[in-house]
Amino acid sequence: MKTRLKKTLQVGVLASVIIVVSIFTACNQDKNTQDHESMNMEKGQTNSAIVHEGMIDLMAIDKNKDGMVYQDMMDWNVISDEPGKCPLCKMTLTEVSIEKAKENLVKNNFKVKES
Ligand SMILES: [Zn+2]
Image (cartoon, rainbow, N blue to C red; front, side, top):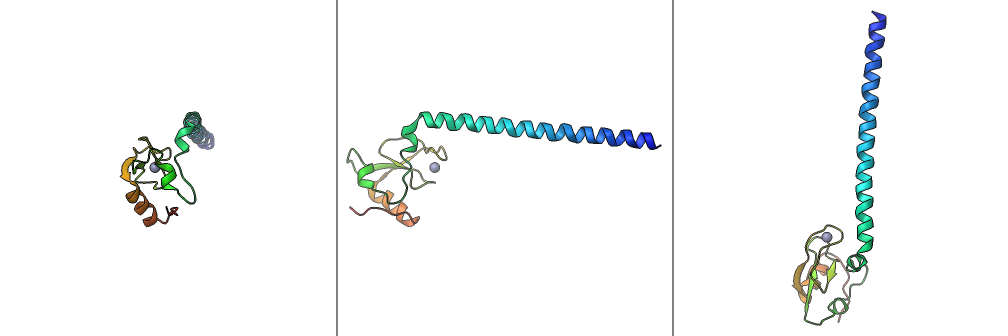
């Protein structure tokens, strides 16, 4: 009786070890994928340049002075003068007027430089 119990325990321990190891491996694979993605992002450095911090100068962002900019509807401080995707959430930027972009920013407590 005792040896049988011991064997059951051993199988149980072995099973837990396998589970732990496979979870650990899965986590590691996740991390590798993320590392790979962030490496790719570093290559496209122009992308992170559209994430604006602190006082946001919309006039400076609107390089071609057409009064329109592309803004992320999730991360309001992600604004570009050209169509593109948000480097943070990968959403496609929406074309809005400077006034609208400013309104969105102010509404969401971002600081906008007065022109
Ligand atoms: Zn975003």
